[in-house]
Length: 107
Image 1 (spheres, rainbow, N blue to C red):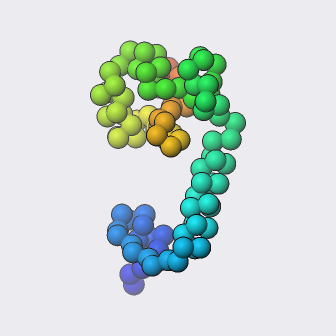
Image 2 (cartoon, rainbow, N blue to C red):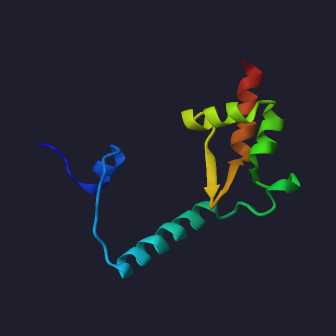
């Protein structure tokens, strides 16, 4: 039996088209934004350049790991180091970067 549930289709990267009215779309967007904000609670996004934040900029990560922006981009695409997107801002969790550095130093 084939599973045609929305979650299964989306998780399998299938195209799903819905027709929604304006109010439903507004509610969906509101929920997505609220979920994103909950996921970032405890992180200081605005002060990522101060050196004490839980989140680091691309430039800070490249400098810390001594890699190029292209390498960082490739790692992100391959899931080696996950980024967080806040609007147009891209940040990396300090703990993830430090764990990656420790792993690389052991090898």
